[in-house]
Length: 117
Image 1 (cartoon, rainbow, N blue to C red):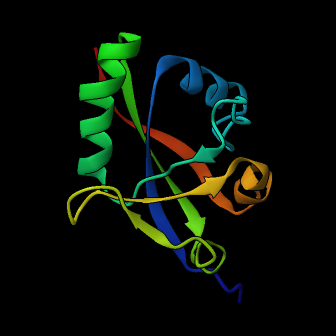
Image 2 (image 1 turned 45 degrees about the vertical axis):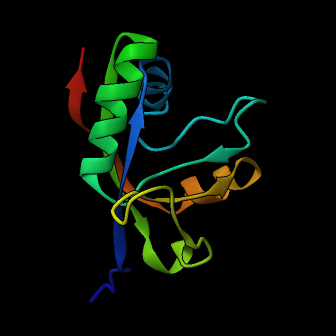
Image 3 (image 1 turned 90 degrees about the horizontal axis):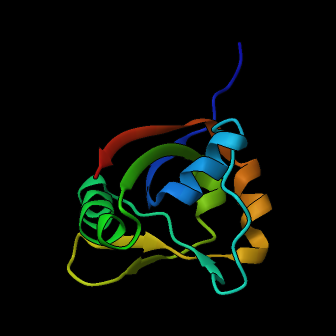
């Protein structure tokens, strides 16, 4: 009998360039941050991710996407939940230098769930 680790569902609003990099990584990992991106921000609810992708990414990049993925819950406990506005605007702040470790705890594939143009 195999024991399955508990996972937490996260969402990530993203633009076309980042999505292309995720695709190149076979939907298994997030690309390294750029120098001006010291933090990786996955969010805790789909509605918040949709609002960012639709209202911000489309305006700045011409398209916005929402991805959904699972991460081992025990690993995520090291990152406190940050409230970035209203009570449902919740995100995790993962320092760029910890992204490889974060990616090692992603379970399964990153899924594209919404697309806006």
